[in-house]
Length: 278
Image (cartoon, rainbow, N blue to C red; front, side):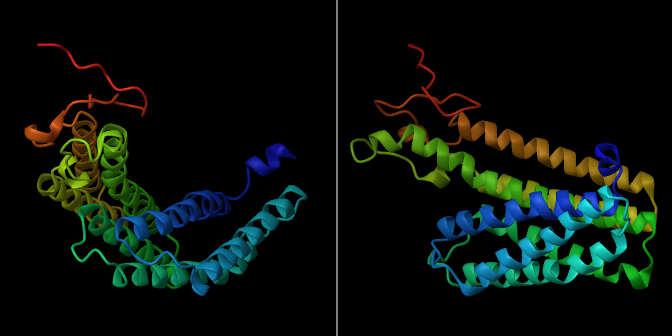
């Protein structure tokens, strides 16, 4: 039976993994992070609860499909169609919630992490629209590949990179400067990163996603490889920005290491790295 479940139809596997675990997690985390970073009202909306219930209904239907397959019933197409309506409803309501979060923000200037999240939301919506169009366009391998790439790298990876750009300096600031705040001059959270060069890398990243998606859909493997190389380069460049944030390399020298502050560990938050005596 376990082998049968492991051999379950690929579309249900993809829907459970990408649409269930990863997307549901990303949606839930984004509610908390974006309201916090944009200084938006944290009140629970009615639509927020509907997002949860609709998404849970879609996952329940997919889970029932797994159980049916384990007992010899291959209802993959029926299960996917049945899960489609609540799944799409959940995404649409989530999109309206995110729009409200941005519109109701108290922080007028949108910082890079929030601005770079917008193309990720657009990629998610576009991927859903492409998925809905598959019955009419035909579910060819190039189209499915383009859809999956757009969803994984445009939506999931794009949102993760955008939020990490704020999470890393925010946690670094709390670790290094939070304990001495009010006693010595400290930088702002945004002083820990350099947004201007990072903005270019986010533009390159999303350009690579768009080009790679088009190349996959049109069946140009060389163009896809070149475009995906742009994604890799941009991810590596943004990783350097995360590294620089952890080493406080972009903090103005006057407030970089006041008394009581030391450079933090690179990977984890804990005891700071001792300062070397000159």
